[in-house]
Image 1: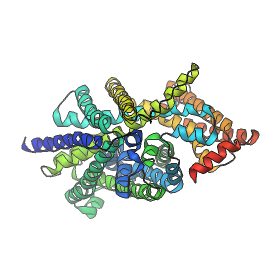
Image 2: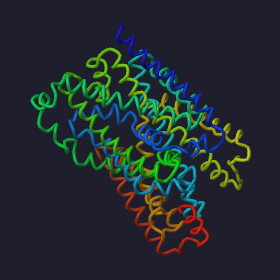
Image 3: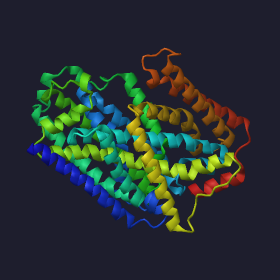
Image 4: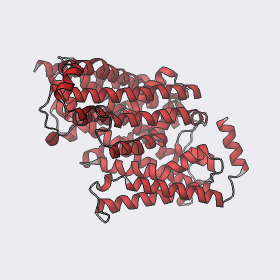
Amino acid sequence: MDSSFINIAIVVVYLLAMLAFGWWGKSRTKNNSDFLVAGRRLGPMLYTGTMAAVVLGGASTVGGVGLGYKFGISGMWLVVAIGSGVLLLSLLFAGTIQRLKIYTVSQMLSLRYGQRATQTSGIVMLAYTLMLCATSTGAYATIFVVLFGWERWLAIAVGGAIVLVYSTIGGMWSITLADQVQFIIKTVGIFFLMLPFVLNAAGGFDGIRARVDASFFQLDGIGAQTIITYFVVYTLGLLIGQDIWQRVFTAKTPKVARWGGATAGVYCVLYGVAGALIGLAARVALPNIDVKALGKDVVYAEVATHILPIGIGGLVMAAAVAAMMSTASGALIAAATVARADVVPFVASWFGKTINTDDTENPEHDVKANRYWVLGLGIVAVLISMAAQDVVVALTIAYDILVGGLLVAILGGLVWKRGTGIAAAWSMAVGSILTLGLLIAYATGIIPSEDGVYANDPIYWGLGASLLVYVVVSLLTPPTEPAVREAWDRRVA
């Protein structure tokens, strides 16, 4: 009872601290730029911490340990793929993205191609960020169920309310400050507490080698196809996700975006290796966990409660909550940004109306409007998480369409001058429709597959068709108008 009370107290203190950071961030939020992208003035330390925090969520932390328990060292590949995505984005594109001084991925497409049709990307991006937020909300609620013994809906409501409060009050500044605490807690919890304690309980590497099969030390033990899937879905998805781009927009300079992000990417890779080693050591220290019945994600909580000393287990549980909350808050503000800046004006244009959501001449009204969007979409995400037993399906569909439909047009615009707006629009349409159609076919059994909606083929076909259409249509249509191209070149310069 004493140990449980101390663990609960530590998590409660952490949650109260998150609310405090919301009020702290409010004092730094004066206009639209402050609320959405922290004033575009994050230095190396803040930027590295917030980038690492937003990409390392529950799947990386709790899921990574579970994969290590089940597959050994090869359980690291999920998080390594995520870290690789951050590295590639930072080294190849972050400098250019930061110089654009925009708020959304769709705005980049409009600037580059000068085509309103590319704004359809905002709808896909909104679905992706909303489902990501709902998934993360449901994930950290599982920790509250274990700690407090609450019903699932109550755990989601309370956890969601905390994220809503600090995200709504201070926007990206509050989220950034909270991310720094979450980054520190995760670092201490994983590298300096969990890893050494579990390795010691397992008898070190020699003890582990003596008590597990050699396959647990094979890098491809999880399966080559699974490793490829991780890189296709997560590495490519991170290159174009609004939640990640919005963090790039917060960097003070292109140099900060490039090297701060690269540092975060390396950190993610090390985090993945540490998580897999923790899971592998837990395989020896706690060999009787029934992952088939309880799921692999239970390993993290079992280690925290049965191996770690009193108090330290609470810090480690707080680290798991921190990982999930940082992802949820980042996805929430990304969803609100896309909805207000891209989706509302685009939908209004269908009815012949023009809506200008930019109210920069009245900063107070502009911030207030953004707060309403964060609050409204946050409530929607919480309700989705409560109602759906498996929002991962919806997130998988959104991720697949994001990669299969939008990747080529977005990266093509950054690397190929000959790419045209018409080609980008057709590429997104063909890739998205083909990916979604194949997902439906696999899910309904029209195309037999054991993986169902989790099959990889829809992404491959969608990507291939999208690339083919983009190249062919670009070569068959006139180049981008000189005025549009010149405006783009001035931005990236």
